[in-house]
Amino acid sequence: MSNDFPNLLIISNNALSFTRNNGKTLNSLIKDIPEENISQLYLSKEVPQSDNCNNFFRITDEEMFQSFFLKRNDVGKIVGKIESEKREEKTDSNNLKNLIKTKESFRLLRESFWLKNKWNSKRLNDWLEEVSPEVILFCAGDSSFAYDITNFVRNKFNAKLITYVTDDYILPRTNSSWLENIRRKKIRKQLNEVIYSSDKFITISEKMRYKYHEIFDKDSVVFMNSTTSFKKANYNQKDKSEMSLVYAGGLQHNRHKSLIEIAKAIELINKRLNKPVKLYIYSNNEPNKKILSKLNREDSSEFCGSLNRDELTKVLNNSDILVHVESFEVKDIEDTRLSMSTKIPEYLSFEKPILAVGPNDIASVEYLKDVGYCITNINNIEENLRNFLNNDTLQKKLIRKSRERFLSNHNQDRISKKFLTEIQKLRQ
Image (cartoon, rainbow, N blue to C red; front, top):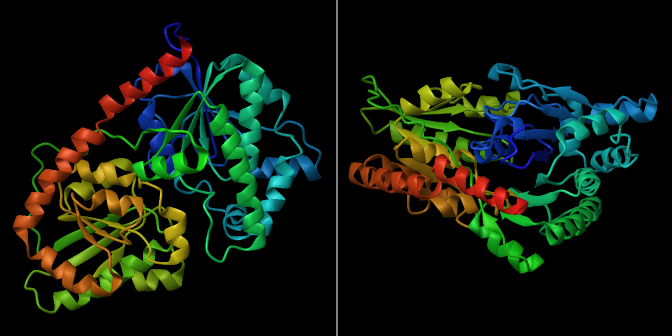
Protein backbone atom coordinates (compact mmCIF):
# COMPACT_ATOMS: atom_id res chain seq x y z
CA MET A 1 0.00 0.00 0.00
CA SER A 2 1.13 3.54 -0.72
CA ASN A 3 2.39 5.33 2.39
CA ASP A 4 1.65 8.67 0.73
CA PHE A 5 -2.09 8.12 0.90
CA PRO A 6 -4.48 6.92 3.64
CA ASN A 7 -6.22 3.58 3.24
CA LEU A 8 -9.75 4.33 2.05
CA LEU A 9 -12.62 1.93 2.77
CA ILE A 10 -15.90 2.51 0.94
CA ILE A 11 -18.97 1.21 2.77
CA SER A 12 -22.21 1.19 0.79
CA ASN A 13 -25.23 -0.89 -0.09
CA ASN A 14 -24.18 -0.96 -3.75
CA ALA A 15 -21.00 -2.24 -5.35
CA LEU A 16 -18.80 -0.01 -7.48
CA SER A 17 -20.19 -0.13 -11.00
CA PHE A 18 -19.91 1.17 -14.54
CA THR A 19 -23.68 1.21 -15.05
CA ARG A 20 -25.53 1.49 -11.71
CA ASN A 21 -26.24 4.88 -10.15
CA ASN A 22 -24.47 4.90 -6.78
CA GLY A 23 -21.78 2.59 -8.09
CA LYS A 24 -21.02 5.01 -10.93
CA THR A 25 -20.98 7.99 -8.61
CA LEU A 26 -18.52 6.36 -6.22
CA ASN A 27 -16.31 5.19 -9.08
CA SER A 28 -16.10 8.74 -10.39
CA LEU A 29 -14.66 9.99 -7.08
CA ILE A 30 -11.81 7.52 -6.67
CA LYS A 31 -10.10 7.86 -10.06
CA ASP A 32 -6.88 9.37 -8.65
CA ILE A 33 -6.58 7.25 -5.52
CA PRO A 34 -3.94 4.50 -5.72
CA GLU A 35 -5.59 1.12 -6.29
CA GLU A 36 -3.68 -0.48 -3.42
CA ASN A 37 -5.23 2.03 -1.00
CA ILE A 38 -8.88 1.41 -1.91
CA SER A 39 -11.24 -1.32 -0.74
CA GLN A 40 -15.01 -1.67 -0.55
CA LEU A 41 -17.38 -3.38 1.86
CA TYR A 42 -20.80 -3.61 0.20
CA LEU A 43 -24.12 -5.11 1.23
CA SER A 44 -25.88 -6.58 -1.80
CA LYS A 45 -25.58 -9.37 -4.36
CA GLU A 46 -24.20 -7.11 -7.07
CA VAL A 47 -21.02 -7.75 -9.03
CA PRO A 48 -18.36 -5.05 -8.56
CA GLN A 49 -16.84 -3.19 -11.49
CA SER A 50 -14.10 -0.60 -11.21
CA ASP A 51 -11.01 0.59 -13.00
CA ASN A 52 -9.45 1.61 -9.70
CA CYS A 53 -10.39 -0.91 -7.02
CA ASN A 54 -9.90 -4.66 -6.83
CA ASN A 55 -10.47 -5.48 -3.15
CA PHE A 56 -14.07 -6.14 -2.14
CA PHE A 57 -15.91 -7.79 0.72
CA ARG A 58 -19.58 -8.64 0.17
CA ILE A 59 -22.36 -9.45 2.64
CA THR A 60 -25.82 -10.27 1.31
CA ASP A 61 -29.38 -10.47 2.60
CA GLU A 62 -29.44 -14.18 1.77
CA GLU A 63 -26.50 -14.77 4.10
CA MET A 64 -28.26 -12.91 6.90
CA PHE A 65 -31.38 -15.07 6.51
CA GLN A 66 -29.29 -18.24 6.36
CA SER A 67 -27.29 -17.23 9.43
CA PHE A 68 -30.53 -16.98 11.39
CA PHE A 69 -32.34 -20.09 10.19
CA LEU A 70 -29.33 -22.34 9.50
CA LYS A 71 -27.09 -20.96 12.27
CA ARG A 72 -24.36 -20.05 9.77
CA ASN A 73 -21.35 -18.14 11.09
CA ASP A 74 -19.26 -17.97 7.91
CA VAL A 75 -20.91 -14.77 6.71
CA GLY A 76 -19.37 -12.62 3.99
CA LYS A 77 -17.12 -13.23 1.04
CA ILE A 78 -14.04 -11.64 -0.49
CA VAL A 79 -14.69 -10.94 -4.16
CA GLY A 80 -12.78 -9.36 -7.01
CA LYS A 81 -14.05 -7.07 -9.73
CA ILE A 82 -15.61 -8.65 -12.80
CA GLU A 83 -14.54 -7.27 -16.14
CA SER A 84 -17.59 -8.42 -18.11
CA GLU A 85 -20.31 -5.78 -17.84
CA LYS A 86 -22.90 -8.20 -19.18
CA ARG A 87 -22.60 -10.27 -16.01
CA GLU A 88 -23.56 -7.39 -13.76
CA GLU A 89 -26.90 -6.72 -15.38
CA LYS A 90 -28.54 -9.93 -14.15
CA THR A 91 -26.91 -10.44 -10.76
CA ASP A 92 -29.60 -9.07 -8.47
CA SER A 93 -32.75 -9.51 -10.50
CA ASN A 94 -34.35 -11.82 -7.95
CA ASN A 95 -37.50 -12.23 -5.93
CA LEU A 96 -35.84 -11.34 -2.63
CA LYS A 97 -34.70 -7.94 -3.83
CA ASN A 98 -38.11 -7.19 -5.33
CA LEU A 99 -39.79 -8.04 -2.02
CA ILE A 100 -37.43 -5.74 -0.14
CA LYS A 101 -38.16 -2.90 -2.55
CA THR A 102 -41.92 -3.22 -2.60
CA LYS A 103 -42.99 -4.58 0.80
CA GLU A 104 -42.40 -2.34 3.82
CA SER A 105 -43.12 -5.15 6.25
CA PHE A 106 -40.44 -7.24 4.55
CA ARG A 107 -37.97 -4.36 4.87
CA LEU A 108 -38.49 -4.31 8.63
CA LEU A 109 -38.16 -8.09 8.82
CA ARG A 110 -34.95 -7.83 6.83
CA GLU A 111 -33.57 -5.24 9.25
CA SER A 112 -34.33 -7.55 12.19
CA PHE A 113 -32.15 -10.30 10.72
CA TRP A 114 -29.25 -7.90 10.20
CA LEU A 115 -29.62 -6.65 13.78
CA LYS A 116 -28.57 -10.11 15.00
CA ASN A 117 -25.04 -8.90 14.11
CA LYS A 118 -24.13 -12.13 12.33
CA TRP A 119 -22.38 -9.88 9.81
CA ASN A 120 -19.70 -9.36 12.46
CA SER A 121 -17.89 -12.54 11.45
CA LYS A 122 -14.29 -13.64 11.83
CA ARG A 123 -14.05 -13.60 8.04
CA LEU A 124 -15.00 -9.90 7.92
CA ASN A 125 -12.72 -8.94 10.80
CA ASP A 126 -9.74 -10.75 9.26
CA TRP A 127 -10.33 -8.88 6.00
CA LEU A 128 -10.67 -5.55 7.81
CA GLU A 129 -7.38 -6.14 9.61
CA GLU A 130 -5.66 -6.55 6.25
CA VAL A 131 -7.37 -3.46 4.85
CA SER A 132 -6.63 -1.40 7.99
CA PRO A 133 -8.86 1.54 7.01
CA GLU A 134 -7.78 5.04 7.96
CA VAL A 135 -10.63 6.86 6.17
CA ILE A 136 -14.17 5.54 5.59
CA LEU A 137 -16.33 6.83 2.76
CA PHE A 138 -19.87 5.90 3.80
CA CYS A 139 -22.60 6.18 1.18
CA ALA A 140 -25.57 6.63 3.52
CA GLY A 141 -28.79 5.00 2.37
CA ASP A 142 -32.03 3.65 3.80
CA SER A 143 -30.67 0.45 5.37
CA SER A 144 -30.35 0.81 9.14
CA PHE A 145 -27.75 -1.96 9.46
CA ALA A 146 -25.32 -0.10 7.15
CA TYR A 147 -25.04 2.62 9.80
CA ASP A 148 -24.34 0.02 12.47
CA ILE A 149 -21.61 -1.59 10.38
CA THR A 150 -20.03 1.78 9.60
CA ASN A 151 -19.96 2.75 13.28
CA PHE A 152 -18.43 -0.62 14.17
CA VAL A 153 -15.62 -0.30 11.61
CA ARG A 154 -14.97 3.34 12.46
CA ASN A 155 -14.65 2.64 16.19
CA LYS A 156 -12.55 -0.48 15.66
CA PHE A 157 -9.90 1.41 13.66
CA ASN A 158 -10.44 4.96 14.92
CA ALA A 159 -10.90 5.95 11.28
CA LYS A 160 -11.91 9.32 9.88
CA LEU A 161 -15.43 9.38 8.42
CA ILE A 162 -16.79 10.94 5.22
CA THR A 163 -20.56 10.66 4.86
CA TYR A 164 -21.96 10.94 1.34
CA VAL A 165 -25.73 11.27 0.77
CA THR A 166 -26.88 10.67 -2.81
CA ASP A 167 -30.64 10.16 -2.31
CA ASP A 168 -33.18 11.39 0.20
CA TYR A 169 -34.78 8.86 2.55
CA ILE A 170 -35.84 11.07 5.45
CA LEU A 171 -38.16 13.86 4.28
CA PRO A 172 -41.88 13.25 4.89
CA ARG A 173 -43.86 11.50 2.17
CA THR A 174 -47.52 11.98 1.36
CA ASN A 175 -49.67 9.00 2.31
CA SER A 176 -46.84 7.07 3.96
CA SER A 177 -47.88 4.01 5.93
CA TRP A 178 -47.15 3.84 9.63
CA LEU A 179 -44.50 1.21 8.90
CA GLU A 180 -42.77 3.56 6.46
CA ASN A 181 -42.89 6.36 9.00
CA ILE A 182 -41.31 4.16 11.66
CA ARG A 183 -38.44 3.18 9.40
CA ARG A 184 -37.96 6.72 8.04
CA LYS A 185 -37.83 8.14 11.58
CA LYS A 186 -35.15 5.62 12.53
CA ILE A 187 -33.04 6.36 9.43
CA ARG A 188 -33.32 10.09 10.11
CA LYS A 189 -32.03 9.60 13.65
CA GLN A 190 -29.11 7.48 12.44
CA LEU A 191 -28.29 9.90 9.64
CA ASN A 192 -28.33 12.81 12.05
CA GLU A 193 -25.88 11.01 14.33
CA VAL A 194 -23.51 10.01 11.55
CA ILE A 195 -23.56 13.48 9.93
CA TYR A 196 -22.91 15.15 13.27
CA SER A 197 -19.88 12.92 13.94
CA SER A 198 -18.50 12.99 10.37
CA ASP A 199 -15.19 14.61 9.54
CA LYS A 200 -16.55 15.52 6.11
CA PHE A 201 -20.15 15.71 4.86
CA ILE A 202 -20.93 15.42 1.13
CA THR A 203 -24.23 15.78 -0.75
CA ILE A 204 -25.15 15.07 -4.38
CA SER A 205 -26.81 18.38 -5.35
CA GLU A 206 -27.10 22.03 -4.32
CA LYS A 207 -30.77 21.43 -3.64
CA MET A 208 -29.90 18.67 -1.17
CA ARG A 209 -27.10 20.74 0.36
CA TYR A 210 -29.52 23.58 1.12
CA LYS A 211 -32.27 21.34 2.51
CA TYR A 212 -29.98 19.18 4.65
CA HIS A 213 -28.17 22.23 6.03
CA GLU A 214 -31.59 23.44 7.12
CA ILE A 215 -32.43 20.08 8.75
CA PHE A 216 -29.11 19.06 10.31
CA ASP A 217 -27.50 22.47 10.84
CA LYS A 218 -24.32 21.25 9.15
CA ASP A 219 -23.10 22.41 5.76
CA SER A 220 -21.85 19.97 3.15
CA VAL A 221 -19.64 19.91 0.08
CA VAL A 222 -21.42 19.08 -3.19
CA PHE A 223 -19.87 16.35 -5.31
CA MET A 224 -22.02 15.51 -8.31
CA ASN A 225 -21.17 12.62 -10.58
CA SER A 226 -18.16 13.35 -12.78
CA THR A 227 -17.02 11.63 -15.94
CA THR A 228 -14.69 11.79 -18.88
CA SER A 229 -16.21 12.94 -22.15
CA PHE A 230 -18.03 10.22 -24.06
CA LYS A 231 -18.09 12.22 -27.27
CA LYS A 232 -16.14 10.44 -30.01
CA ALA A 233 -13.72 12.74 -31.82
CA ASN A 234 -14.53 13.10 -35.53
CA TYR A 235 -17.51 10.82 -35.08
CA ASN A 236 -19.69 10.97 -38.18
CA GLN A 237 -23.30 9.99 -37.99
CA LYS A 238 -24.59 7.93 -40.86
CA ASP A 239 -27.33 9.45 -42.95
CA LYS A 240 -30.54 8.43 -41.30
CA SER A 241 -34.09 8.45 -42.49
CA GLU A 242 -35.36 9.35 -39.02
CA MET A 243 -34.58 11.62 -36.08
CA SER A 244 -33.62 9.52 -33.08
CA LEU A 245 -34.32 10.40 -29.45
CA VAL A 246 -32.53 8.16 -26.96
CA TYR A 247 -33.30 7.55 -23.30
CA ALA A 248 -30.68 5.61 -21.34
CA GLY A 249 -31.48 5.09 -17.70
CA GLY A 250 -33.67 3.47 -15.06
CA LEU A 251 -37.42 2.89 -15.26
CA GLN A 252 -37.97 2.91 -11.51
CA HIS A 253 -40.00 5.69 -9.86
CA ASN A 254 -42.53 5.45 -12.72
CA ARG A 255 -40.22 7.07 -15.26
CA HIS A 256 -41.78 4.79 -17.85
CA LYS A 257 -44.98 6.85 -17.60
CA SER A 258 -43.24 9.99 -18.88
CA LEU A 259 -41.57 7.98 -21.64
CA ILE A 260 -44.98 6.67 -22.72
CA GLU A 261 -46.31 10.25 -22.90
CA ILE A 262 -43.35 11.25 -25.09
CA ALA A 263 -44.05 8.28 -27.36
CA LYS A 264 -47.70 9.30 -27.68
CA ALA A 265 -46.65 12.83 -28.61
CA ILE A 266 -44.25 11.48 -31.24
CA GLU A 267 -47.08 9.48 -32.81
CA LEU A 268 -49.01 12.70 -33.39
CA ILE A 269 -45.94 14.65 -34.52
CA ASN A 270 -44.97 11.99 -37.07
CA LYS A 271 -48.27 12.50 -38.89
CA ARG A 272 -47.02 15.96 -39.97
CA LEU A 273 -43.29 15.35 -40.56
CA ASN A 274 -41.50 14.08 -43.64
CA LYS A 275 -38.63 12.81 -41.51
CA PRO A 276 -40.12 10.63 -38.76
CA VAL A 277 -39.04 10.78 -35.12
CA LYS A 278 -38.47 7.73 -32.93
CA LEU A 279 -37.72 7.28 -29.23
CA TYR A 280 -35.29 4.48 -28.33
CA ILE A 281 -35.27 3.35 -24.69
CA TYR A 282 -32.28 1.56 -23.12
CA SER A 283 -32.42 0.34 -19.55
CA ASN A 284 -31.12 -2.38 -17.23
CA ASN A 285 -34.62 -2.48 -15.73
CA GLU A 286 -36.74 -5.06 -17.52
CA PRO A 287 -40.36 -3.81 -17.59
CA ASN A 288 -43.28 -6.19 -17.18
CA LYS A 289 -45.32 -7.17 -20.23
CA LYS A 290 -47.99 -4.53 -19.66
CA ILE A 291 -45.49 -1.67 -19.49
CA LEU A 292 -43.42 -3.13 -22.32
CA SER A 293 -46.43 -3.14 -24.64
CA LYS A 294 -46.92 0.58 -23.96
CA LEU A 295 -43.25 1.44 -24.51
CA ASN A 296 -43.19 -0.38 -27.86
CA ARG A 297 -45.47 1.80 -29.98
CA GLU A 298 -45.09 0.89 -33.64
CA ASP A 299 -42.88 3.53 -35.26
CA SER A 300 -42.78 6.05 -32.40
CA SER A 301 -40.88 4.22 -29.61
CA GLU A 302 -39.01 1.01 -28.90
CA PHE A 303 -37.64 -0.62 -25.75
CA CYS A 304 -34.17 -1.93 -26.63
CA GLY A 305 -33.01 -3.50 -23.34
CA SER A 306 -29.60 -3.07 -21.73
CA LEU A 307 -26.20 -2.29 -23.20
CA ASN A 308 -22.69 -2.39 -21.82
CA ARG A 309 -20.69 0.81 -21.53
CA ASP A 310 -19.07 0.67 -24.99
CA GLU A 311 -22.30 -0.25 -26.78
CA LEU A 312 -24.21 2.54 -25.06
CA THR A 313 -21.51 5.09 -25.89
CA LYS A 314 -21.86 4.19 -29.57
CA VAL A 315 -25.65 4.46 -29.47
CA LEU A 316 -25.60 7.86 -27.74
CA ASN A 317 -23.00 9.22 -30.16
CA ASN A 318 -25.23 8.21 -33.05
CA SER A 319 -28.37 9.81 -31.56
CA ASP A 320 -29.87 13.17 -32.42
CA ILE A 321 -31.37 14.13 -29.05
CA LEU A 322 -30.76 12.71 -25.57
CA VAL A 323 -33.75 12.29 -23.26
CA HIS A 324 -34.03 12.56 -19.49
CA VAL A 325 -37.34 11.94 -17.72
CA GLU A 326 -38.83 12.05 -14.24
CA SER A 327 -42.27 11.03 -13.06
CA PHE A 328 -45.08 13.50 -12.36
CA GLU A 329 -46.55 11.24 -9.65
CA VAL A 330 -46.51 12.84 -6.18
CA LYS A 331 -44.80 9.88 -4.51
CA ASP A 332 -42.06 9.77 -7.14
CA ILE A 333 -41.47 13.53 -6.92
CA GLU A 334 -40.98 13.16 -3.16
CA ASP A 335 -38.53 10.29 -3.67
CA THR A 336 -36.40 12.03 -6.33
CA ARG A 337 -36.66 15.75 -5.59
CA LEU A 338 -33.16 16.10 -4.09
CA SER A 339 -31.38 13.50 -6.25
CA MET A 340 -29.14 14.12 -9.25
CA SER A 341 -29.27 11.54 -12.02
CA THR A 342 -25.85 10.03 -12.75
CA LYS A 343 -26.50 10.08 -16.49
CA ILE A 344 -26.80 13.88 -16.69
CA PRO A 345 -23.01 14.53 -16.69
CA GLU A 346 -22.63 11.81 -19.34
CA TYR A 347 -25.34 13.40 -21.47
CA LEU A 348 -23.67 16.79 -21.17
CA SER A 349 -20.39 15.34 -22.44
CA PHE A 350 -21.85 14.22 -25.77
CA GLU A 351 -22.56 17.77 -26.99
CA LYS A 352 -26.06 16.81 -28.09
CA PRO A 353 -29.38 18.59 -27.49
CA ILE A 354 -30.96 17.35 -24.26
CA LEU A 355 -34.71 16.99 -23.77
CA ALA A 356 -35.89 16.79 -20.16
CA VAL A 357 -39.49 15.92 -19.23
CA GLY A 358 -40.48 16.12 -15.57
CA PRO A 359 -41.63 18.40 -12.73
CA ASN A 360 -39.62 21.61 -12.39
CA ASP A 361 -38.97 21.17 -8.65
CA ILE A 362 -36.91 17.99 -9.05
CA ALA A 363 -33.17 18.64 -8.74
CA SER A 364 -32.24 16.92 -12.03
CA VAL A 365 -34.79 18.86 -14.09
CA GLU A 366 -33.98 22.11 -12.29
CA TYR A 367 -30.29 21.56 -13.07
CA LEU A 368 -31.02 21.13 -16.80
CA LYS A 369 -33.34 24.11 -17.21
CA ASP A 370 -30.75 26.39 -18.84
CA VAL A 371 -28.70 23.76 -20.71
CA GLY A 372 -31.51 21.53 -21.99
CA TYR A 373 -35.06 21.88 -23.26
CA CYS A 374 -37.32 21.17 -20.27
CA ILE A 375 -40.99 20.27 -20.54
CA THR A 376 -42.46 20.56 -17.06
CA ASN A 377 -46.16 20.22 -17.88
CA ILE A 378 -47.22 16.72 -18.83
CA ASN A 379 -50.26 18.10 -20.68
CA ASN A 380 -48.17 20.12 -23.15
CA ILE A 381 -45.61 17.57 -24.31
CA GLU A 382 -46.70 17.37 -27.95
CA GLU A 383 -46.73 21.12 -28.62
CA ASN A 384 -43.45 21.75 -26.80
CA LEU A 385 -41.69 18.78 -28.34
CA ARG A 386 -42.75 19.83 -31.84
CA ASN A 387 -41.38 23.34 -31.24
CA PHE A 388 -38.07 21.94 -29.97
CA LEU A 389 -37.63 19.51 -32.87
CA ASN A 390 -38.18 22.31 -35.38
CA ASN A 391 -35.84 24.83 -33.74
CA ASP A 392 -32.27 24.15 -34.92
CA THR A 393 -31.04 27.49 -33.58
CA LEU A 394 -32.20 26.67 -30.06
CA GLN A 395 -30.70 23.19 -30.24
CA LYS A 396 -27.28 24.56 -31.22
CA LYS A 397 -27.44 27.15 -28.44
CA LEU A 398 -28.20 24.47 -25.85
CA ILE A 399 -25.35 22.30 -27.13
CA ARG A 400 -22.88 25.12 -26.46
CA LYS A 401 -24.29 25.65 -22.97
CA SER A 402 -24.22 21.94 -22.15
CA ARG A 403 -20.56 21.71 -23.09
CA GLU A 404 -19.73 24.66 -20.84
CA ARG A 405 -21.66 23.05 -17.96
CA PHE A 406 -19.86 19.75 -18.42
CA LEU A 407 -16.42 21.35 -18.39
CA SER A 408 -17.15 23.52 -15.37
CA ASN A 409 -19.04 21.06 -13.14
CA HIS A 410 -18.33 17.48 -14.21
CA ASN A 411 -14.78 17.20 -15.49
CA GLN A 412 -13.56 14.00 -13.87
CA ASP A 413 -9.88 14.94 -13.68
CA ARG A 414 -10.62 18.14 -11.75
CA ILE A 415 -13.29 16.70 -9.45
CA SER A 416 -11.45 13.48 -8.59
CA LYS A 417 -8.34 15.51 -7.72
CA LYS A 418 -10.51 17.71 -5.51
CA PHE A 419 -11.82 14.61 -3.72
CA LEU A 420 -8.28 13.26 -3.33
CA THR A 421 -7.24 16.53 -1.71
CA GLU A 422 -10.18 16.36 0.71
CA ILE A 423 -9.13 12.89 1.84
CA GLN A 424 -5.50 13.82 2.24
CA LYS A 425 -6.55 16.72 4.49
CA LEU A 426 -8.11 14.21 6.88
CA ARG A 427 -4.77 12.56 7.46
CA GLN A 428 -3.06 15.78 8.54
